[in-house]
Amino acid sequence: QLHLQESGPGLVNPSETLSLTCAVSGGSISTGRYYWGWIRQPPGKGLECIGTIYFSGNSYYNPSVESRVTTSMDTSRNQFSLTLSSVTAADTAVYYCARGLVTESYYYHYMDIWGKGTTVTVSS
Amino acid sequence: EVVLTQSPGTLSLSPGERATLSCRASQTIGTSYLAWYQQKPGQAPRLLIYGASSRATGIPDRFSGSGSGTDFTLTISKLEPEDFAVYYCQHYGTPRPPFTFGGGTKVEIK
Image (cartoon, rainbow over all chains, first blue to last red):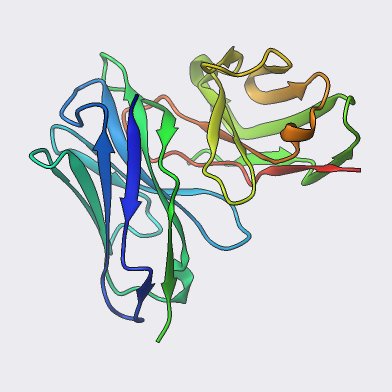
């Protein structure tokens, strides 16, 4: 059974760079059937998908963070990562990683497996 | 960008009652590419429904989805105590993610 586990620093200073990793077990991230995504949820608010990455390396980002975000994959460790630069208090959130389906025509679909999330607080 | 508007914001019901949640899209969603997720406090979202009406693996049949075009509905036929949670809709099904979520509907115990 596929399992996703986020890890991160917990606390980040304003203006610094946030780095998060999602370790995947029970299946390979190097598959064309799935993409891998990052979703965040500020305290008491809704869900925002901020970035996705496909095994080919294609990444797509939410316009709200596009200038500050990068996603990457480490197939040797079976994990993928998110970096978010120049963070502010508005980036304080629970960050989830998730697996999404990709069709044969490379259409991205719903996310069926999620990690438990990691809390990130931006504060000095 | 597709904007999803969920209503009501909060639904106060008793166990055993029927819950009807709405998700309206700002433009037609092709091929009913609409998913519903359930989120309980302190937990990650869980996929309930995809393709507007298909239940995900392990989801009880008291959960059903319907709709097409711009109007979609999640129905919980008889609320169980574990169903009190926040529900989000999300569109998908294009070559270019990420996809937006609706603002959520909280189903609370009356």
